Structure formats: C-alpha cells, structure tokens
Image (cartoon, rainbow, N blue to C red):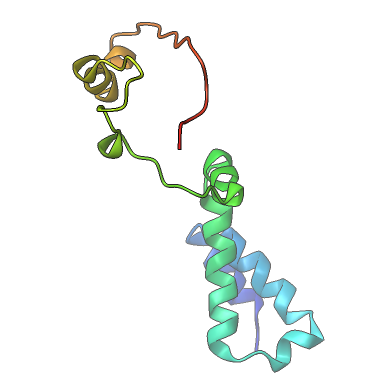
Length: 111
C-alpha cells in the first residue's frame, strides 16, 4: 500500500497528528499485529491530544477527585459566601467589562 498519498491527504485535511502517527505505526513492526480498531483508536487519540489546549491536557492529567461545578456550591455552609455575588461572578460579565477580581481569604474546602 502506498502510504504517502494518504499522509498527504490527511495533512491537507488538517489531520497532521494522524498523519504522523500513521507513518510511525507503519514503521513499527510491532504495530502490524494490532487489530484495525486499535490502530484507528490510536490515530484518533493522538489527533485529539494534539488538538487539546495545553491547559485542558494538564487538567485531564491531574485526575482530580471531584468535578466541582458552580451549580453544586453549598450556600448553607457558614463561610460568608454571598449567593447573588457569587452567581453574578459566574456569568463572567466582569471579564467582558474588563474589570479585575481579587479573591482573598483561606483556601481549601471543608469536608
């Protein structure tokens, strides 16, 4: 099979990570034993990893124990959190208005 036309087409489509991985797999004798779904999965995984922004890659690799969301904040806990202020900050309007935000106080969470 001629792989170079396929690699050129992948690069033309903007799938450079898949093209590079395809060449890498083609040159690896151990990859010949891999089933087709594994090849495809590896190609797609490499492309997704290449497209993820670095901050998202770091977040995924951190393997945080909890997925904290604004919707899950418990306002009943006595920590002086103003619900209306917190929810207005969550809209990010302050960013669009080019305002600054400073958060002061103790860090961490109470279990």
